[in-house]
Image (cartoon, rainbow, N blue to C red; front, side, top):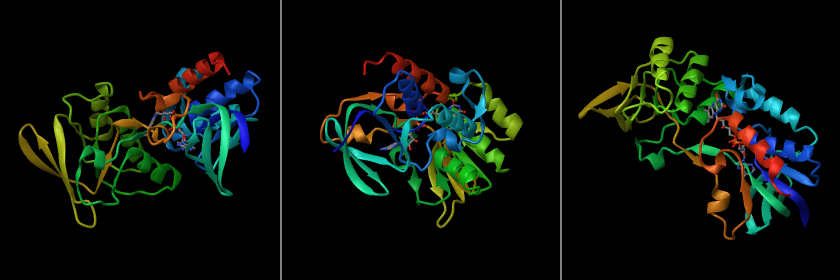
Length: 290
Ligand SMILES: Cc1cc2nc3c(=O)[nH]c(=O)nc-3n(C[C@H](O)[C@H](O)[C@H](O)COP(=O)(O)OP(=O)(O)OC[C@H]3O[C@@H](n4cnc5c(N)ncnc54)[C@H](O)[C@@H]3O)c2cc1C
């Protein structure tokens, strides 16, 4: 069986930064497994600006930040198109790549699999399953990686940082959302983002407003919302269900055995900026005993 001193699962900002720093410490026989064909994690498809301040003291677009991290990790054994499927023993993983499935053992395992937006189903949003209903991650992949325009007047559900990232992604293609719908009385992002949405992009932010249903049979036609005791129908042709991140940790929660892993980046639970994930991963890699 193939054996390594360190296996890092996930080649996003946290995993790449952790590997780069261990390599600088002279740790060898280390490998990073990344399921996508290209490493870099979420920033690869965040075409907007705003990455890197906490780690590089300069701001870059997401794709530039991903390139920078890959360059810093040059020389690391980085295996893309490689998914860790699960654990067969605490230190043994089932790993799948184009050649098939194999078992790989490691003395130290680092989980850097990030976080994802919670699904529509887990938020109990009713209505038909329509292709114009998606989360921000999917929207960004369509827009920045595939250059597709999935709708022209969606509503955005949520008022987190990522919801405003969805707004910027829409603006990139000239998509003008009909509204941002926020269940809470205040947005989770800084308050002035609401002003930015209205004044810069012409999009109203409706707080204390709850999505009741998505209407449409073969395509989204409108959403129904509850606002201050009354109901309102907002015409739209798509819905972006943004935010409410959950750790991407099924490797732990579904494990038949209890693997011993170190967590880095957003899989730790709290949603952080990419720069913070990198800074924290570097600091941990510098002090961890391996
Ligand atoms: C829409 C959006 C906009 C954002 N905008 C900003 C911004 O402007 N500025 C900013 O600083 N931050 C921003 N962020 C946050 C930033 O992207 C994250 O903080 C950062 O990407 C987290 O890094 P990570 O390495 O923990 O996880 P990720 O970037 O999610 O990387 C995890 C990696 O693990 C891989 N992986 C998962 N499971 C497996 C498996 N089983 N086997 C192999 N590989 C696996 C994934 O393919 C992925 O590449 C944004 C996030 C989103 C979603």
